[in-house]
Length: 124
Image (cartoon, rainbow, N blue to C red):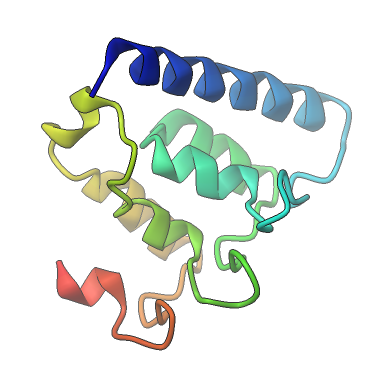
């Protein structure tokens, strides 16, 4: 992966963190969609494996079972498994079981379907 893509991902993560901090500080909706695909902040933060911000969002009331893009079943727990366009450092890291356990402890559905197939969690 090129350094440009890694830099883009780092900048994107920092932007999300600033947005989240602002929304929490101003009692704004933390479950709002941040793009046309109905992505939530929790989904994006799960994608980046940022446990501190996962906890912050859940404590602020983020929906751990919000579905991405017209109910295809891509919930925050599934976003932990996304490997497309990842920072190269994430590809060699150990899977963040602590984040998955935290989401499950806070109500994430382990039997969720991904586009009507078996849960990605069960495939790992």
